[in-house]
Length: 110
Length: 116
Image (cartoon, rainbow over all chains, first blue to last red; front, side, top):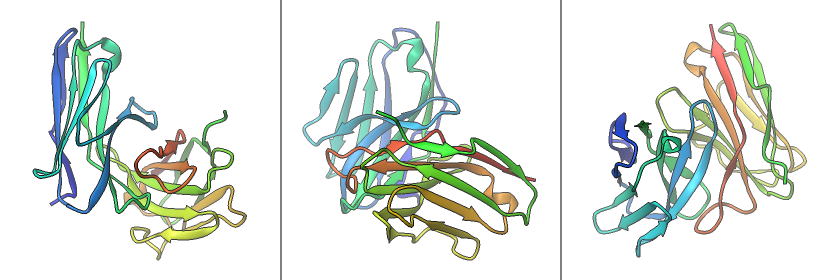
């Protein structure tokens, strides 16, 4: 079993739709959590950190449930520019090592 | 602020050949990471440096891969000899300190390697 698992993609949604990505992690010692975005043939970039209290950045909302070892990302009012692969990322032990999920591809259509 | 620099951007070699990649992190960043990203997968950490010391190389295939960061600034990753399964994007990242809550890793554009 992979340490970080994400919904298989791709997700094809129309502009304006709300889309949710789910992620589970297996190591309960994991300390910090992130969503990264990776555009086609580009490097990953930090989208947002994920906190137990939940956090929101504009149209993006991230949630963490430590008891269930579950992370989610909600995108409201999808834009064409949101088309990318979204990577769920876990940091173990706070020592810098990031464990990436396989990514979920999102395609927003006009 | 300049980002993480990597070269070359693309490399095509034949199996059993050698190849080297170079990375220059963001100025002042003490922690440097090399990741391997195979098509359709997320990046996988190969090695992490703190200044010029190795922190984690548990997933580095040491029979063929080597990496160094001699002066604690730029770094090279070498594959010798290359296998077909080494075809991937090799990403370098850096952070001011080992990343955790509040500390972001910044990635370079990557080197795309194709082994024929």
